[in-house]
Image 1: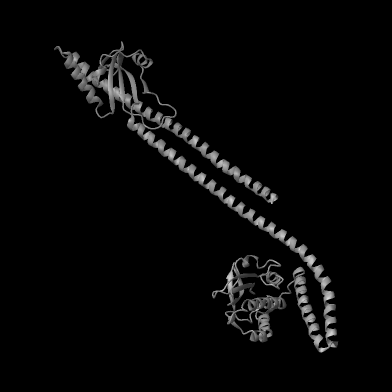
Image 2 (image 1 turned 135 degrees about the vertical axis):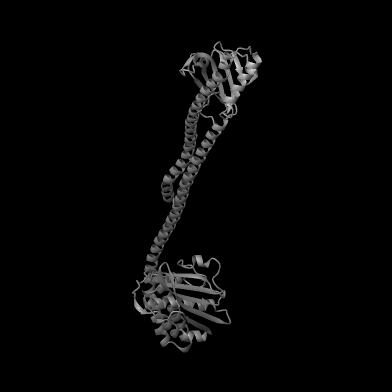
Length: 474
């Protein structure tokens, strides 16, 4: 048994590694999923911001052109004095018409000293912009764009507070040559990018969901393989234990058989002498002593039969298979037992669903002994019954792609006692007071030597059933 446990642990070791690998791979794939989704999300965000910057540049050029065309030039060309409120309303009108439906959250115009001189949000007017790197770069004539606040590597989901800002110089525009002059101020445009980043977030979710589904599918397959491997190994371990048990049982039986054969051989010769002597004394004895001599002869015959069973168990004969009619042994047995059946009032009913004259590979002498043992057991089981019936059914069946001949013996006795079926074919196990427990063991050996199988069960009427299946000829 320790050897079996060692084999089991060695066989399980690869599956233990696979199980460890499945759990480890689950964690690793989960981490890679987060990293990959973050990388893909950042790459997608960069593309979105790149498109947004191009869009904002076009918007700034349009806004710069509209302010120069509709605000600066009219003020320069007019000769009347325009109040500050009129200038503010005109600028607000130009800006609002230029940014209408462009998802612009706020527009600030900052002079080169850093003061906000105009804003679509009035509360920003008058504020001073710190000398940030972005403002200084825009004031020198370059455009700058950035996210506020910046995105992190592990940011997931949309952020309602995050905006996209772009700072670009506002320049004079010469209508004749379409040339741009030096920066006069700085545009600061704040764009609402929540909808764009919601799309990015949805893409991240879809990617994570797809990777998780793939991971779950792979994990399920690996665990199924591991569980199936465990079941196979458990089944093989059980089969190995059964084979080891059968091997040990066979070794014990072989040793017991050798001992029984030696003992039976030593008993048979003196027993024959005792019987011959009793027969001789009985022939010469007076009438009163002949009965005692007859008892010795009968007991000697019974003991000789027991010794014969021991020898048959210890040294089973090999089946001499040849083609013969199926019913040859069965009909011969019924004819031989007819007088005993009539004496004990036992009715035998034969049901030939398959003709008994069908040829089959068999050893008639050994099958004769099998049928005799079964009939003797059935008659002993029905000894207390008023009505004694044995039904013998012969039928042809198919199992495992092979044809079989089934011979079923049903009696109306009390049936097999509880737990008897499990041990019925064990040598020396018997429920009879004077039985040796070798009858069914020998029967089983003979049936298996014919390539068949035998089974005990309950008959439909509640009695005992013995089923014998023998291979049919093709």
